[in-house]
Figure 1 (cartoon, rainbow, N blue to C red):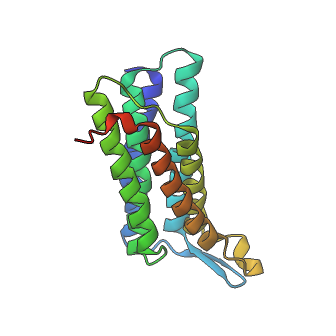
Figure 2 (cartoon, one colour; figure 1 turned 90 degrees about the horizontal axis):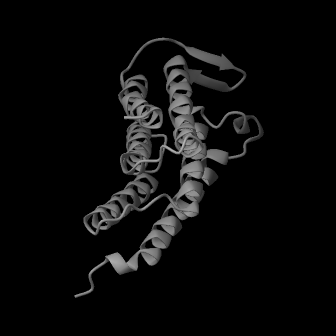
Length: 191
C-alpha cells in the first residue's frame, strides 16, 4: 500500500461525505446575490468533490514519478473514479439537477468498461486508462462541478453551460467506451 494507492483510497472515502452534503437536508442557509442562490451544503459538496477529483491526477502523477505504479493502483484508480462520479450523478438526479438519461448513459458505460476490465484481469492483463478515458473523466468532472455550483458564473449571462457540458459528457463517455471495446475486442469471446 503505497502513497498513490492511499490517495486513491482517500478519494473513495470522500464519496459518502459528498453524498451526505448533497442528500441530507441540512439547513445551513444559502449564499445569495442578485438572482443567484446556492446552499452552503452544495458549496461544501462541490469543494469536497473538487478535492476528491483532483486526487485522481495526483495519485497517478505520484505513482509514475516515483515508479510505484501497481496493478492494485491500476484497478483501484478507475474504480474510485467510477464510485465518485456515479454517486454524485445519482445524487444530482435525486436533486432534480441532472437528466436521468445522462446519468444512465454514463453509469452504463462505466459498468460495461468495468466488465471488460474484469475479463482482461481474468486473461492476466490490466487495462490502463486510455487517452479518451482521461478526457471522459475531465469532461464529466467539469460537468458535475458546473451543476454543483448552479452553473456559476454562466447563469449571469443566461448561458446553459451545465446543460451543454452534460450532453458533451454523455457523448464523450459513449465514444470512450466504444474506443475501449474496439481496442480490446480480442478479449471478448465471439463463440
